[in-house]
Amino acid sequence: MRKRVLLGVTGGIAAYKAPTIAGALKRAGVDVSVVMTDAATKFITPLTMETTSGNRVITDMFSRDFPYEVEHISLAKASDLVLVAPATANFIGKVARGIADDMLSTTIMACKGIKVFAPAMNTGMITDPAYEENVEILKKRGAYFIESDSGALACGDVGKGRLPEPQAIVDYVLDLLKVEPDYLGKKVLVTAGATVETIDGVRYISNFSSGKMGIAIADEAFQRGADVTLVCGRVTAPVPSYLKRVDVTSSADMYDAVVSRALENDVIIKAAAPADYTPKAVAKNKIKSDTLTLELVKTKDIAQAVGEIKGDRLLVIFSAETESLLDNALGKLKKKNADLVVANDVTEEGAGFNVDTNIVTLIDREGNLEKFDKMPKAKVANVILDKVKEIWSRK
Image (cartoon, rainbow, N blue to C red; front, side):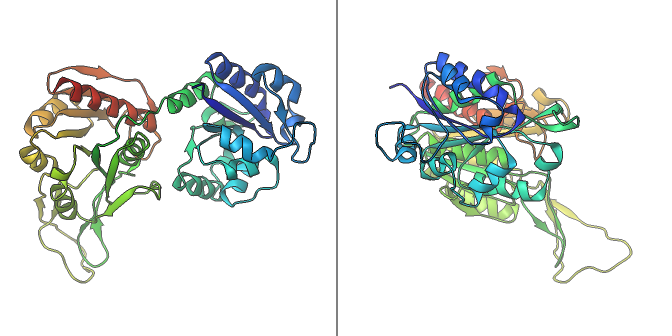
């Protein structure tokens, strides 16, 4: 069946890219409907969008120039995906706070399908705490955000806030529309985030992991039909409310949560960053001294423990390195009896902690190696899940 996308256009200078987005989606075989806010019509005309999309453009909630139907409900039901490009800070704030006062905002509220926002605004706005809070609210509800580009902005500033090039947006949308329930009947356990190793009553040891990669894998596996369990350490990224979540604190907690559930699952994906060391002794109260010396002991290796008991289950591990990437990754793959290792050099720009992209190399136990360029973590997640399917097919 032909996919249907509702393209929402809001009022920003980047609206001039919307006709190109609509045309490219149409050429890809997608049926494109367009809703423009009143502010968007000050930048481009509805006629331009009608010409490129091939469909009537809607701008007015109260227009009667069409056969009777509850327009925003029918659009919401008919669309497989809603894309707002460009998405202004004002519009994102409205949707996050449940304000529905025009055709586009009411349609999005009524839509139960995939929602994608491509923000475009001034650097000061995109880094404002109020805007960042609104984005986190929408991500928790399952919305996708296409990361803005950096460069020269229309206002004369230089920084983050540019709308990505139309083809990048179209590729992102087409990738989401290809999602199929190919994991139905499969049980997948994913770990995400950092662990916290207590020193005393107020201090702990941890690392920079945000949990974004593991959460993206869990979310994509869920979208593809899997029964997903997310074992979640300390994370700064939002976790969709529909995911089955098991919260843990320390590496020992994560070990127990994963090992006790490993045999209940078909695939175990270890994307978390549990601590390698933990204090040998924990002080009940805050330590007060001019110097502090900690004796650390190794934590239990969770991936290796799973590798020893997994049987015919698939184990996917991550190898975040700062040097000798492939050698270290291959060593871990063999030592932990894993089926696939996802290797990344965290010193590369766009591949470290707390960013929305990653640069990975996949290596399976047969020695097959695939290196990928920088891409959003949601797309990395699907690349990993596709590779897991390929390994299944060989068993």
